[in-house]
Image (cartoon, rainbow, N blue to C red; front, side, top):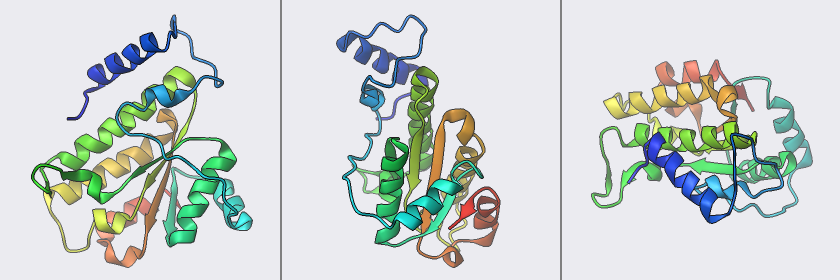
Length: 201
């Protein structure tokens, strides 16, 4: 069950009470654990690894240059995204195609993706405006989310939502990272406006 923004904030407020945090309209300091905001999507637990330092430096240089980053991915690149989160000391959240599948019906329902992504963005936005802490949001394998030749309502809706995330990323304290195995398998009408808003690595 997804949380509306109002219900989401109510649940976070309940977490404050449980954790004896008195906000009084002020931002909480970084020293406090912001996991109390992870009421919808939990952050990834990052392990310290030995990444490709040059690749991580390249990703770090791209942050802030555009609305986000698009990676032609393999396993090492995903590890580098985790290493980037460690380097920036920011939480990492991941969205994949399987997150949109309704568990009881084992299929994607109309509007499921938009509701899911909006719920994640609301969680990260609320954490950002309350604490000042940014987040890295990883859209893994967007070629599976936006397959070529699948010009359906849900595919177009997902593309529109992802573009909104990119457009509002700075205001919401989100650093978007998108990965794909091959941009050629995504419809050009969808991938072209995304590429215009990201740094391609």
